[in-house]
Length: 260
Ligand code: MG
Image (cartoon, rainbow, N blue to C red; front, side):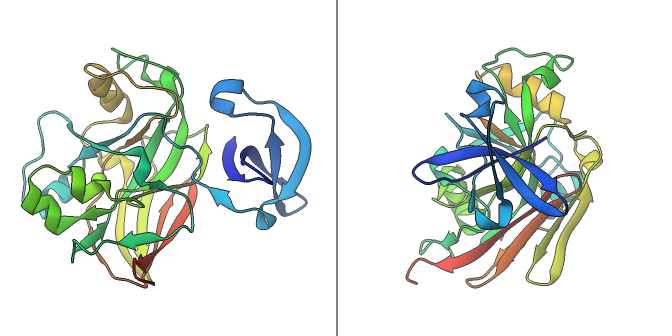
């Protein structure tokens, strides 16, 4: 099931993506499915007639995993970590599909990082690898936008990864996906920059959840970015960046000047 969040008449609404005779539709839900479950209102709208928003605004945090693909660790000039490397992005960095990534004045080297994103479904702590699937609500696509120059100069990554608009996610949450073997590609303009499979992850999704919850509580709606494949690189103002994940869809955003 694909669950999307969209701009309703007054407030954001949730819906289930479907197909009516070749027309992609969204069946409206009564509330937030993370808290209210799946209850349809009976109303349906063509997806083309709504503006999709970030499918979830994390209640507390976006957890990022660094260097979780060997080829990416190598291109960053580092070793593969012996345990997951964790950082946080603020929930204020989250934007939805087709929303602009603002290029900050403080940086001159802003990179895309296409990633598989996990959406947590319930409050959890000390989750075992075996139990990890039970705390997952679903999966979406993420772009862990990073000011590479500030990442190096700051040492800490809070600023480099924490600017407003630096965490596009979407276009929806897929509740049925095997995350262990999906192709992840990132296209900048017309050029494919990243093309790897989630099977190349050093730490699997269940291993990541077990590690993260060994020291921090995860809340419903929290998002984990599972690390980027190799091929990261700079984006320029005016660029369009699309991350595609097999079984999930495509997340597209445009890089925009703050002065525009
Ligand atoms: Mg990343």
